[in-house]
Each structure stands twice: as structure tokens, then as C-alpha cells.
Image (cartoon, rainbow, N blue to C red; front, side, top):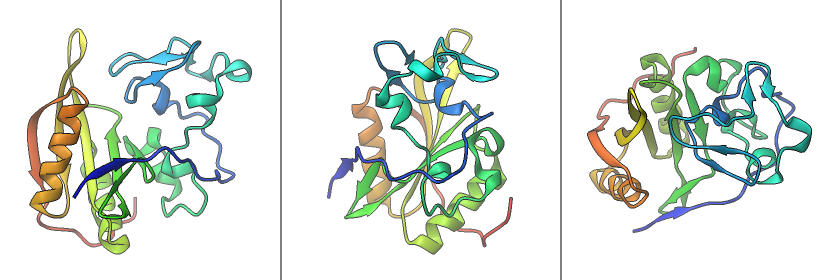
Length: 186
């Protein structure tokens, strides 16, 4: 069994990102000629009002990246917008056993419990695996450690630990959620 990284982005829906800038705030890595964000450090063009170079932002990744909240046909309600839910959800980044994995990256110290339980319910009703990642930070910023939570099998959990380790991260806490809660509205 292998984990495959996916590089496709489906058509976006009519939802507008603003005022959310979570993908530019240093929770995801961005590497482009005029835009760069590292874990724990926001892109220099990220402002309270959005992207400071919006009209000149690069196609990849700035224009082409769309979190699951903006993807066409999404099951994520309005309250799951990253700045409101505390998590960036991606449905097209990883694949395991031929199925898309729900990848959830915290936009703070941890994913709020209500959001995490909602994602567990989504994983259950869509028969997908879920991997939830919260990066550790200290006074200097992101320190290379993360907390990982998964749903599904022990094999999947181990593959996710290995996958993130290959990306240069060290797991400080790993857990597999055994109980999936009923769907809760946010």
C-alpha cells in the first residue's frame, strides 16, 4: 500500500476566499518567485485585507490552490471556511488505496474539537480516511514537530507518520480516533 501525493485542483465554486487568508498565513508551505510562506511564517504579501499583490500573484500555487471549502461540489458548509473553523481542509492532496484522503491542517495550536468531530463524521459518511495535522511552534516559530490524528486503520496511521517524516517532520503525538461521533453541525 502506498500514499500518493496528488497535484490536481478541481473547478472552484462561487465562494470567495476573503476575508480568509489561512493558506497564506504559514500553515502551508508556499514557494513561488514572488510569494513565499514557510510553516510558521506568513507570506510577506499576506495582509488583513487579503493578498497585497493579488493582481500579480503567481498562477502556481497562489491562483491554482483551492482548499476543499472552495471546491465545486463540496460538502463543507459555510462555517468550515478555514478562518472560521480553525482548519484548512484538502480533499485532493493525498490518496490511499485508490481513495482521496481528507487532510486537515490546523490554523492554530490545534483543531477545535467541534471541527474535528465534524471532520470525523465527514470521513465516516464518505468512507474516507482522515489525517489531521497540528504543527508545533515555539517562540522562534514552527519547530518541525507535529501532532497527528487519524481515523481508520493502524496501517493508515503508520503510513501517515512515515509520509510526514519523509517530509522532514517529527511526530510528537500520534493518535487514532476509535470513536466516530454522529454528524454535528457547526
